[in-house]
Length: 256
Image (cartoon, rainbow, N blue to C red):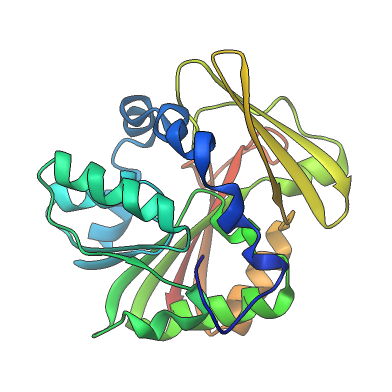
């Protein structure tokens, strides 16, 4: 999400969380090589199947997907709300010889960087769970909807908070988002509207962030209310999945 002088809410706390030592170790947490192997061509295939070419990577972080998509021939614009993340993304793009424009931008004011509609918007890495307010999620999804061409696709993910809140989840595996070889992730419920995530690299406690535990049904309802249909949900890259073992839900939704 993002930086805005005109708005402030509990949904903005992530801006302080993604900085300092945590940011310096973020690429190590991600494990670019291992993550690319884990994802395979999943997102590329989804985009190509929908004839998408112009893509907004709305939660680019340090640029992992922006780099991969640009290398595969997509026209990419990268955005994020955390200014230090964008600085690192710009460096990662430059060092890999990839020409992708980057922006610090509040999702709720996305029209500020949309000069023409996109064929697809990506919001990955559990990023929507930084939005604690229902109104912020609604405003964000509406902005994503409006940034798309008619028939364009939104691809958004979030952790399997259903299993976490219901007490049925197994140990969180690192096969989806944080794939670094010495990375571990621990989720703990503080109350029904706050789940803390602790990240460790090499046995060291790296950082904790607070997230809103977005349930699958809640997300599907919000997508429909924002004007999306033909919504397909995957569990860790598969349409058939075990709801207790799945680490992430991935929603693919079409703008009407």
